[in-house]
Image (cartoon, rainbow, N blue to C red):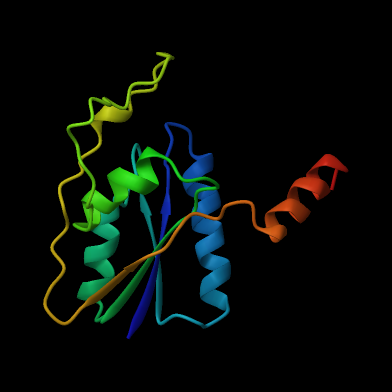
Length: 146
């Protein structure tokens, strides 16, 4: 059984989770994956570990984790891999994940404790969307008021 887990950033406002959930619902209707779930990086539930546990408990033997993020960044390159137990980087680089802004934007409160993947379950982590031509079409549609 194959599961797709979409990872959203999360927000104190509902919009981030709502959009990722809507994307998941639309993917579900295509019938490609046995299970489609959403996990949120921060601020919202279900968390990433909760979503992973849910699909494994439902019988998934292959879990494809796809961040619904446009660009690579600290979350996609470090935080999510840590949660998935696949992070290979070096944390001693001095980077504290504090940006040059401090407007109620506390990224350092999320839990990056690794989720346990049972024996016999394959975990696949995919890259963010990037500057895919399909994204370009959406940007142009929005620029044209569509």
